[in-house]
Length: 640
Image (cartoon, rainbow, N blue to C red; front, side, top):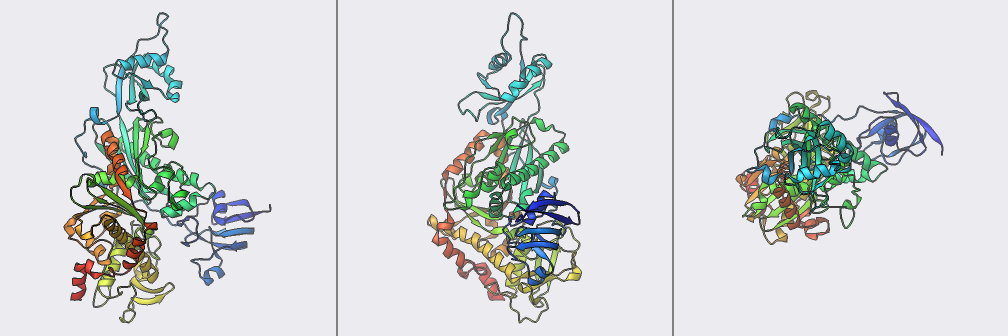
């Protein structure tokens, strides 16, 4: 096969690849990272490069105008090499560190009265062994087993890596050791306890420090708690954007990317690197040895768990939507690439189905829904809208694809909620002029999810857009105009912005937002219908997830994202997934409760439900085709 040389500018790096190689894959070989937020499907247009010279074939020009193509632009994920070429790679979008510092919410109260002797399965024992002699030639393993039996552990499983080091460790410690033990062996449920570590220490001395980490792998953000397993105290927390974002901003994009070449290994590496980065930050700040972290619990949606464990996720998006596993067995840290004690158990919490995972089962426990006596609706809003309805006696659950619109993706001037993002907008009903607030102050860069919700609500309430989300172009304001993507509203003029370009909301953006909010609201309705109740019967609505903290209830009701109920009925709980993982880290009882929650849930597959399609279609209006379900919005519209 013929090979060609590609040179990338401005770095000057080059590589030789066979004909037909994608520019994006060639860039990787040359050590250049080109973001593919849609997973390489050619939908987002954000991997555009400039072909300065050479022969290429564009398989798709979606998101590129004829003028762009004429200027040499090509989508790196959809363009193949057919000759030597020089490629200019524009500066890549930076995934900025979260504006909210790790310490902003670093302390979380103990979720229950913690008794390590009762709740915790990772324990430490100080052991004094009789040294071997010619009169006592008992082997080292048996000698340790007998000593631990005297401590109340009738049997012990020694992993092979520890067996290899056992003789040296015992002799270096002069037969005075501390054994870190997992008292219930997940590899043998009814079997002996499992040795995790063996440390030098004198009998009767202070027991070694024992730490754990609770982790939530979100599609957008990964969060971690560092926990003292002896006291149960959450010592510190950290959060970071999931490194997989550059290969897909939603789960479907990542599933698609994982099915290509070594994409699965790459995505696993990226999330492991993100988690290890958080762990490194936590241990440095708290002067902890990472090898003293002896346990980890992990929450996440099914796709995130599959990618973390490097399990192929392709079947999740294919009929009949069956994942590889809903209840993964724990693995050691060495097996899954976490930089903690290599024998630490890493327990991925149980999920329910292809799109309802451990983030929801853990969230149901942490939110209190698992013990609710009144009808309660729980939702975690992100790139998916995952929700559960019920009481302590029964639970139904479903998930709907909201897409990444509420994360600022798929929107012309959208961005994540970082420095420079417009986070809230107000529109004057008389002049149509906007006022906005920017995260961190200064000039705006774009619109984040909370701004998109507030802006759409304001435009609707002030009459700038109609019930169908169409702009009223006859209002006589320069803010409304025709742009490259159709009609648009100018939120900030170029002179006001950091990039020197107008920040706008387009008709296409509104369509994306309308579909996202309609999917979530339709999910509520179908869940309620499935058990013969209405949304009016719901006593409380619990909202989990990091994004939920920033939702303005009034604005969300006005666009039909949330049901119209008294504001006091809404509770914003933050990241309930990591809180549930924290509870499971501390208590086997809590871990068993999460498993019971998963087994109790009845899952509705909305893609096979005609009721969902009808409900979705009805919700594709502001706030809904049926204003009767939104009395507060109807009253506001009547006043206008």
